[in-house]
Image 1 (cartoon, rainbow, N blue to C red):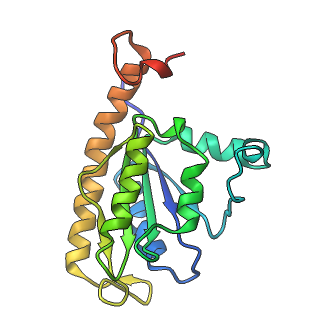
Image 2 (image 1 turned 90 degrees about the vertical axis):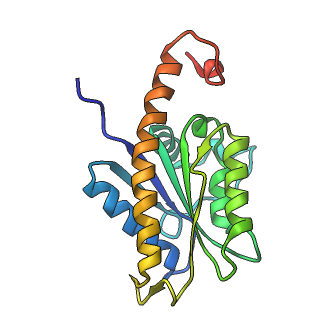
Length: 197
C-alpha cells in the first residue's frame, strides 16, 4: 500500500505586500509540490487572524477550518521577517492559536533578516519545543537585495540552502510523520501517548 504524500503547511508570517519572505516560502512550496508533496500555503496577509484572545479565539469564524488545516499538516514551514531581533507579530499570533496540533510534527524555519536571523530562528525553535514539535537542526536566513531581489532568488548560496531544506523537510518529515502515526495508533509509552484517542 502506498503511503499518503507528505502534507505541508507553509505559513507566510509577513504582512508586507512585496515581502521577500513570501517569495522564498512560495518558492519552497512550489518545489515541494513538484516533488509530490501536498502543500497548503497560509499567507497571513491574505488570510489575517484576529489577535489571539483565549476567551474567544476558538469560537471565531474561520478558526475551525484553520485548525483542520494545521491538524492535517505533517510538517510546517514558518516564514518570518526579523523585526528587532524577534519574529513578526503575525507569525507569533498564528503560533499562539495552536499547540496541541503541532505535537510530534516537523518545523522548518525561514527568516528574512539583516542580522542573520539567529534570535528569530531560536524563538521559532523554542515555540516548537514548547509545543512538543521537532525542528530541523538549522534555519535558513536571507537578506533582501543580496539574496532576493525584484521577486526573484538571486543568490546561488541561498538557492543551495533551500535545496537542502527542501530535501531534508521531505526526508525527515516523512520519517517523523510515519512514526507519529505509529505512535498515535500504538500502545508503547512515549510523549505522544497522551494524544491517543
